[in-house]
Length: 352
Image (cartoon, rainbow, N blue to C red; front, side, top):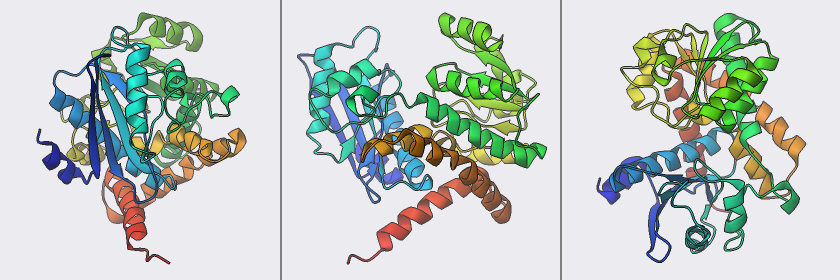
C-alpha cells in the first residue's frame, strides 16, 4: 500500500520506519492522533507475509488506540509499534535495544508498552535505552502486567451486554466460546468461571489448551469449530479479523465480547452483526482495561484507582448500547461517534 495514502485515509499523523542491519531490526511505529495527549500503544513482534501487510496492521492498531483512549476518557493519543520478525527465533537483546533507541528518538511523542510477541523481560531491556515506555514491573514503580485488568474490563463489558440481552448482568449458567487462550483470555476466563459461566475454548498452543481444560474445566474444540459452537457469548481473544462476512453467519450466540483488537474485518460486519440480532461489544471499548492501567503509571501508579476506573467500562458499554438504540445504528458506529465527538471537541477548544 502507498504509505501516505494509507495515512491520509485513516487520519494518521506520522509513520516512522526503522532499520538496523547489525541486529536485523525492521520496525514501524505509527502515530495516529495526539490531540488528547501523547500516543500510547504496545509494541507487537510478529511475522507478516509482506511489508504492506505489516503497515496495514500497524495503522489499524494505532487508530484503534486513539479511539480506545478517547472513549475511555483518557488524555492520551493512539500509536502502535511493530517489529517484523519471529519473536521465538529472531528476538535478541541487541534487536530490542535498537528498537528502544528508535522509540527514544521520537522524544516522547510515542510511548510504548508490551503487546503480542513482547514480554515483561523485553520491557526490562527497553528500560535500558528509553524512558518512553509503560508497563514496568511493580518493583520498578510500574503498573506490572496489564492482562488481568484487560480481562476484567472485558468481563465488565460482557456483564453490561448480558443485562441488555438477557435482562440480568449475571453470567451464571451462560456458555462462553473463547477464541484464543493467552494472558488476557485466561484472565477473562477466571472472572467468567467465578461468575458461573461454562467455557468452550480453542487455542493453537498445546500448553494453553491443557490449562484451559484442567484449570477452568473448559471444553476444547478445534480452531475453526469455535464459530459453530452453540453458546450465549462469543469471545474473540486471539489476533484480529475473527469477524468477517463469512464467519458471522456461523455464529450461534447473542453477544460478541472479547479481548482481541481489530475484530471486524470491515465496518460493514458490525451492521451484519446487528441485523443478525447479535449484540457486539466494540473491541477497543471492552479491552481498554490494559490501557487504563498503564495510564496510571504516567503519574503515580495506584492499583486500586486503576481497577475502579476499569469498573467504568461497564457504564461505558451501557452508554454505547443506549446510543446505538437511540440512533438505530450498530454499536461499532455508536462507539466511533462517541470517540470522534471527544476528539472533535478537543480540536475545537480554543487555546487560553
